[in-house]
Image 1 (cartoon, rainbow, N blue to C red):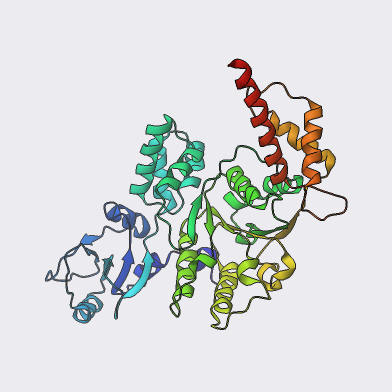
Image 2: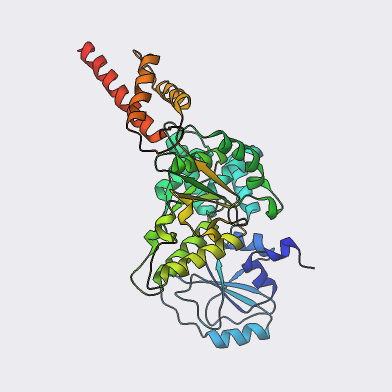
Length: 415
């Protein structure tokens, strides 16, 4: 019987255990490759150079550098098979027959944990910091920690993620998002969801119980994107924005390849949250695409949403869920649909009051001003709801305008 551990064993480890002769891998950290391979295989890899004889039952590594090297692959393959040995070819210019492509070298969590406990002695603190380092190599983790310490004089998961965002090398359509917000008031049902599901997302052992994603449905300005930032900040993991429209390319097949590359990159960054904003702009049922590219990209995304086994929480936002194909957010792909609506009058007053209190040292306002800000926002509200509501964006804009007016008077009086 196939166990869960066996099903999701890293491909590189499985390929080595199967004694595949030629294995191609990529890594961004050749400096620590030996240590990583020892942790994965419990064997000591031997650096190999061309023309060196192949020994019995050995694990070799060969790293491609800038210098071009021609390897006699088929002759090597035969010699490796004959001696029951394996050669891992690192960062080859291309994967070709008879190589087996094992993808990117994973950094075992046990090894990353040992590194973090050398940086901070507290194991619980180390576990927390690991959330901000998903997908990083040992070298990258060390550099991020040093940069964060140099800037903040302390090490926190929020600080690590901020540093990581500054150096994150995105691709077409994939960027890391800063989760810091001056103010956001989450709806109660989102707060409850985060409190209930966070332990399962971070520490759940049974994959069936790990939350997979949410669909935020609501009119513009009701706080859907801000909710995604707040959620990632509360969980303590990086937030990535995947702009599916931004992955489209005029060349045949390139759009689909860009999407798959980005989805693989997101998987590698686990644990994280990925935001697919305003998905109806790409996948609305009314969208026409004579090339069939959109349909193919939708099929790829649907497959990934259903089959992925990584700790990637997907947040999709839409201004109108009725425009989306139902299979995009059915059970198994998305756990729950959350509707975002505007704030009613009492909620709006509380929102403005709380927002005003975030401005340190601000005086000269009273609840009459709060009522006026709310009334003005309702008068210009674009939300057609019953009962009438107003968006957080409109209330925020009105509050900022009031604070500027009040502060300008303070400046004038001081002058």
